Structures are given as structure tokens and as C-alpha cells.
Image 1: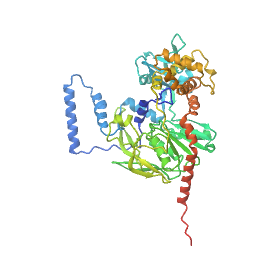
Image 2 (image 1 turned 90 degrees about the horizontal axis):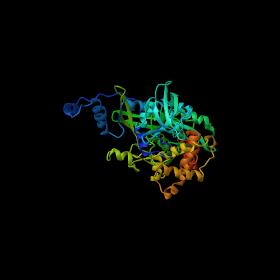
Image 3 (image 1 turned 180 degrees about the horizontal axis):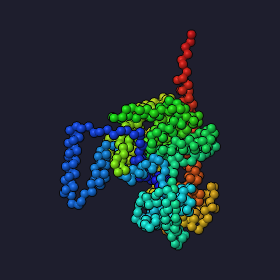
Image 4 (image 1 turned 90 degrees about the vertical axis):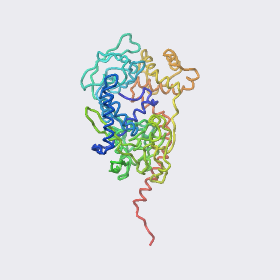
Amino acid sequence: MARKSSSFLLVPTVIGLCAVLAGMFGPGVNAVAAAGNEDVNSATRAFSKVFGLVEENFADKVDPDRAIYQGAIPGMLRTLDPHSNFYDPRAFKAMREDQRGRYYGVGMQVGQRLNRTIVIAPFPGSPAYKAGLRPGDVIMMVNDKSTEGLTVAEVADLLKGERGTKVQVQVARDGSETPVHFEIIRDEIPRESVKEAFWVKPGIAHLNITQFNENTSREVDSNLRRLGEANIKGLVLDLRDNPGGLLNEGVAVAEHFLQKNQSIVSHHGRSSPVRTYAARTSGAGREYPIVVLINGYSASAAEIVSGALQDHDRAWILGENSFGKGLVQTVLPLAENTALALTTARYYTPSGRLIQRDYSSRSFFDYYYHKGETKNLQDVKMTDSGRTVYGGGGITPDEKFVTPKGTPFQSNVVRSYALVNFVAHYFSTRDRKAIKPEWTPDAGLLVEFRQFLTKENVPYTEVEFNDNLDWVKRQLTSEIFISALNIEEARKIVLQSDPLILKAVDSMPKAKALLDTAKKMIVQRLTPDVQNQ
């Protein structure tokens, strides 16, 4: 199931941070046996003694698996760094599904409200979409099991299953006095990491990469090929809220836009030799200017791509400071479908700056939730054309554009799922086919929405509603389009009025100037000095 809320232009902080925890995984390495020194042996004996005392004397029976796998191992990893992690079977399976870019189920985005799971949006073409499930449907039963009190993850697990198997879903629907029943045949659900590229204006394309899984570079190539890459005069590469993923896919995406032999990223650690990744060919997309969008939840592989394009003056970086996650996690499979994601190295951009933000002098809570803007003034590097860049704090944009913070009113509306529920109520008496791409909310709809908020006990004042009127209109437009068209069509329509994307279009001349400078630098390096005779 998707991790974002129904209002996909307003990403909840906690979900963004959980996505960052997914991290980025480098190439596999062989597990190295622990050194048999006395310190290690002494610590091991001490742990065994403590565990024996706990098991023998604790008031209740001790579950060894829980004590070791949920307590001792995660506790040890927390003393190392914020991103080393232990995966139990469920988490390991979910991580592999993310990497592979597919799973088996019914194909819809869900959320939770008042101990019930509701449908946010079925994915276009999915079994749930074909069966007729709608945004706002409340999932009451899956097969013979009530969903009351279950978490979203638990309901998602019930909906998943082997391809070709049947699942019975019972929903409560606004406008229907009795439950609505569906029998859905599960199928493979692709987790596309690249949302369909589209034209935001003539000659200017938008391409959004949501994560880096096993299919990302192929999806980038196919989307740009479908648009007709030769027709692109400028590209908005959207890496906002991208938590990272697979190293080789990040390298492949950067390679698409760089010249042969230009470096992309390097990494090394205590037991990991230096390795540099460079473009193997001259990229197909090297002729047009690029503006890259990043924010505080752009991490890992997203930072590698944006850092490489910035260091080579290949793209103008716009937005907010990225997360600053430059630690390599090597996944070491363990017994019983568990795994250890252990930090083995650090990532460096082509200029040599460290991506990772400092975490040594703060709690992990502060590391994730109170990022701020940091940079190491001792880690000063230069781009190809001589522009100054700093390491130790993620990727700093060439031009800042800070998205306004959500207001308490907006938070209340999103948390209550009032938008999804209102639109479900709205269409219980209206024809979805009447909604066209040029539709906009009118005064009557806004009055109806205010009445709905009051009925649903969502707190607000008249001043708050009026102060947030533009936001309300954008969110209503988004939700109406999701329900009447589909989530992908809605996304394209809404993004065309996204303030940061409009700013990116205006910034395209700056990206072109960078590109022209980079081309001149390449020519100068390839042309031998000519001396007067």
C-alpha cells in the first residue's frame, strides 16, 4: 500500500521520516567474522550472564525471540548510527517488496480514521479499481474478519495474498444503507517509482521519481522515450519526498544526464575500500537544461543524483536542504527470513563532499525531527565551474524555495480525512462523469464543505477557513479529480499549478546557463594548449 496521505501535496512528517528510515542499500559484501579478542569475548560472556539471570528470575516467562530480536539487537544497533537496522520477517518482506517494485494484492491506497480503514484511492487498472471500490469506502470486513481496531498495516496484510486468489471485501459506502460486497481476484501490483512524465508547458517536461527500486532507471528511460526526449527543451526532475533506495538505480538515473566517465558517487568505510561510480556512456538526456526539486525528505539515492548533477553543473537545484543521509547500508540476510542492514561506508559526491549529516552530538529523535540547516565549513568543495559547495549537511539547493508550513487548520482537516469523506459524500448524489479537467470549486461547494466540517466535528473558525481558502480549494480540486478521474490524472492536473513547479519553469534559464558553462569547460579540457611560435 502507498505510504502517502490522501492529500498527496501535503506529506505527513512521520510518514516522510519512516520512508527515510528505509534508507539506501549498496552492493552486498561478505560478512566478516568478529575478531576473537578478549574485549569481545568478555562482553559476550557478560551478555549471556545477564540474559541467563533475566530468564531465570523475571516475574513472567521470557520470550527469547522477543528479548533478542526486538530488544538486544535493535538496542545494540541504536548505539552505532541512526540507519543501521534489524528487519524481522514482516519488515524484511516489505523492504524487498519496495526494492522489487511490486507485490500481490488488490491495488489501492488506504488510510485509517476512527479505528477503521478507508479507501483513499484505487490504483488505475488494479483489481480494486476494476471491481468498483471508491475513495471514501470504509473497509468493514476482509473475508470473514472484521477490521475494527486493526491498523492499516494489518488490513493491508489481509488484502495481500497469492496472485490469482480471491478475497472478499465488505465496505460501508456513503449513500448506501447496506454494506457493499466485492469479490476481488488478487494480482501483481506494480509499485511504479516513476510517475508518468507529462508536459507542464510546451517543451517543459515534469518527471517525478518517488523512490529508487529495481525498475527505476527503466521507468525513467521509457517515460522520457514516450514523451519524445528530442522534443524536451527543459526538464523538471522532481525528487521531493524521495527517501532513496538502490544505489545502482540512482547511479543509472544520474548516468542518463551526464557525460561518459563523469563521476557520480564514491563510497568507502573502515572495512570497505574506496569505490567510485562513473557514467559508462554519454547520457541520452545531456542536451537540455534540468531543474531538480528537493526538500527535507529527499534522501540517500535522491541526494546522490542531485549532488552529482550539481557538482557537474548539469542541473539547477531548487527547493530546501535535503535530508543528509549518506550512510551505506549493506543488507546481510540472517536466519528465518530476518536481515541486518548494517552501515558499512559513507557516500561522497563527485567533488568529494560528504552527504551525511552529523548525528554524533544529538539524539536520534532530534536527528530525524529537528534537521535544520547544517553544513561543515571545513568540508568546502567546488563544482566543475568553480561554484562553492559544502559537505556534511545533505545537498544545499542553488536556489531556496521553502514550502509554507501547514497550519493547525490544515492538520485537523488532513488527520480527520475530512476531504476524502466529504468527496465520498459529495458523489453519493452526483455523477462523477460530470467532472471535467477544467472543473473548479464554486462558492456552493465551499459552503457545503464547511457544513460537512461542522457535522464531522472538525474544529475551525471562520477566520481560519478564510485564511486557508486557497489551500481548501486546491485540496478539494485534488480529491474531486481523484474520485472522478483517477489518482494519476488528478496528480497531473494539480501539479500543473504547484508553486514550486511553476518556479522551476521560471528557473529554467539558470539551468541553461549552467549547462552552457559546463559544455565550455568540457571543450576547454579536451582542447590542447596552443602556443604562439
